[in-house]
Length: 157
Ligand code: NI
Image (cartoon, helix red, strand yellow):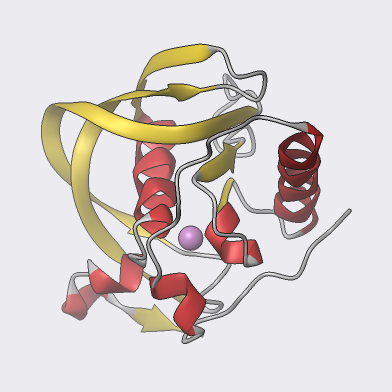
């Protein structure tokens, strides 16, 4: 089921999301809905915060930009390490329609969390996936990419 995506400056987007304590049917439904919502909007990542749910859950599928991409759901994701140089690249966000701009982030991150079945996951993500994961975890901390943007690079449609 496609859910509504909150748009900036909705104050919910600035809220730090709460950790998930239990993986139950309601959480699995949320994850399915988040994938439906992300694909419907042709996004490559979505955080529960963006659909108004106060839980630390993100979904990603970077396959439109990187053919090795697969659908990934992460519960309580946490960056436990960074790797490689800081890189500036263009970002956009489904919650900030029509705006893009350059954000500097580490090239790769080590992320730990759980998958949709509650199993522990540790992954190293670089390139587009690494950037998308950092962008989505930012959402869980109430941070938008426009908070990190290089002002000279911002464009609006
Ligand atoms: Ni976003």
